[in-house]
Length: 639
Image (cartoon, rainbow, N blue to C red; front, side, top):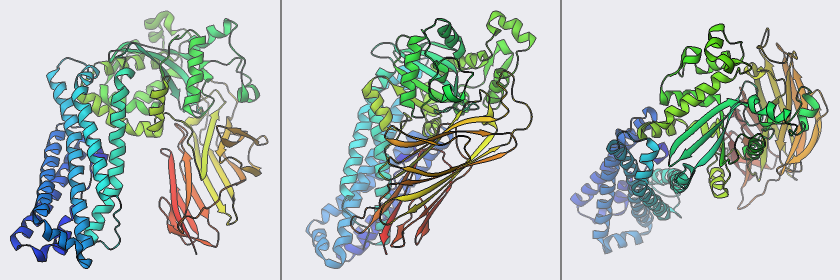
């Protein structure tokens, strides 16, 4: 939503002053000046209203924002009309060498501003339509109302997208060089915000095109939910301790069941049909006797792991039809509970809210049920320590089913960061829907990279919640050779802060057993290693070179792993400039405390624009974390 806050060319008055002020009557010029500033005032007011919606979820401000956008659009239309009324006079001004460029830019930026205001107004009106439908349909669920409002809202968003595309056409080809500073600023803001807003609108239009089918309008849809325990880190975010099956029809959840994954896995094993353990399990996890749903996510790219989970769901009799897979980590607990409110779990005599949810999940998963709980649950309590999580998830899903439309929209806003961080990852069985998930970066897929690339993936093979205490850090150094190639040094630090015993029902190894994989550009070659407990293996996967090994981290110690490798990075100059481009992917639920990058450039190259980095001369640096997938880019020039 906040990407719709489109800064528009408020400084059109500057071009009027420079281009036509001397050629028009004073009062006409004064009117244009007034309207330019009036447009700015309305747009600032609209921005304020929308920020209230984004920050607080108060959708009552949407209509006020729409009215402000409409008022700004009227002011731009009036300015355009005044410019047109000048006719040959304005054309003459555009032909004057010292003023023509400013006047032409003013005309085009004003038109772009009008189109962008129209787009924002249409988009805001689409939201207003949805809210009005919600008010008119009291007692209906949000998804039912969404279906009813789509015929009105979808065309509005399509018109908004068209208007933004027209705005982009108006300012394309303009350069800020030589423009009055205020005009140059307006152009820069449009160049930044319009493509961003256009992407958001296109995503909304595309999503609305498939949303009815995803929600079961064309027949029942079945979704497999993987509940990922980040305390026991696995490649897609955590151990699959619980799974759920959600069935949707006509936008309504008609059934939702959640269960401990072991309840499906062990009968599968005893049937004699379970396959043997694979890969790193066979080598480093002797306690694993078979491969099943709980361990299906051995790949960090969610699409591949999800397909394996679908295979096991069919093999284990969980569901014959699976239309999609949703992976969720415990990061989504708070936004969900903030949306549905406190949830009572009478079997455990507790009420769960955003302040205590994660602690309660940990407590009931990792300690024996009390006598009172066993009496209430009866046979369900036997060997079912994950039951609390299943009951909680089912209760939350049932509450979501009854949310009204504004509450659903507020939840959607609050979950934006969850999608970016991969706390939610989605896979669809239908190719067109999966392509959309990948296009809008909610599918957790491995990304293509034409330059540098890094993805550090940890995998807990301890069968214990070590990752609640292990604090990782990453330091990455790159030395680029002018002749081609780069020497890279990767240092991974694991600080294991736990003291004392682990939880009940865990395998007591006495250390954190981690299978490490580092995905780097294809063609990379390992030069040296230090800190792993076994030699590093090099192999290929999904078009990337992978360095893999096993390491042990003992409680109260700090473990450092260092890899030195060569990669075939080459700086390619076009038009006198080159780019250093680094794609860094985040492993779901595994955010390092610090992520530091240092790039040393050849002596013949210097930094033109550091972009995402800091730096000048021959060095680039980045200091931060990895809250989501990153693309760090700098522009370079020859000395």
